[in-house]
Image (cartoon, rainbow, N blue to C red; front, side, top):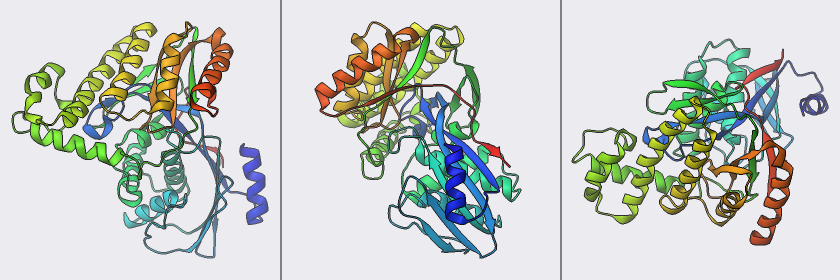
Length: 385
């Protein structure tokens, strides 16, 4: 991938790239839709992601191109920018704009992006593009921005420039990832702990439904607002700042104040999902993968029945996983509404699992899914300089 990108960079810009950076995507092992509710999540960076070949230019131009999209941008350098429709380059453009607004000077740049991360799949392709852009400029122009602060800036881009009310998890995970480890992240305080992911005889399998989703046009922002309404009701009887500040027993005692069955279901998922993350952390620390797998299944059931963000495609995959003897746990990962599921599958059964899962999915849904193994890797880094 990187050699093809560098060759294409020469073809398009008629010079060598000065730098090449890579930022992974991520899967969230457990803890879905609680990052914007102040909860704990457990993401890990994966060995698929976004490459960025980049050089400075003297023409005071921002030239942004991608080998994955036909459209590109050539913009005069200015102090700030506004979003331009739905084009992919809004993600790096927002990062550049916000860095400048914070007082960081940049020169003209020629950027070429390319990656092997399935787009619109729930593996954080947008966060990967944002962080690789921010990290590249941070290195090239010696801005000295710590990675957690860079993640916060890119979250701001996602929320304000792009318009998705997401939490910090995606940007933090791809910036701060560590090989062989998941991150137990408190999304309210950014306190975090690295947990060894020792899969033993199992492998982490990603199943892409190939049903793309657009978070701006989906019910993502609707869920965000529903949680806010539930929290507002609970604040009348509890001294809390976030839904995830509430313990399960405490929630069950006061759930009646919500007085709306839909909002109650949303809050029920959030509170108990946050508790599942805590249980999952204990399971990882004791290498109890069977217990971890059961929590994955419970997480998906909650997302399917209470939060209602999975859909037929993801449910078909996870329900199949429950019937497959060599799979000990599965769930949707990411925001849902399509995208990907993950599963823990016996390593020596991985090929058989892929074939049978694919056949079942084709029969039930009518088009193919993609099944592939992934490894847990480091976060954003420079590949060459």
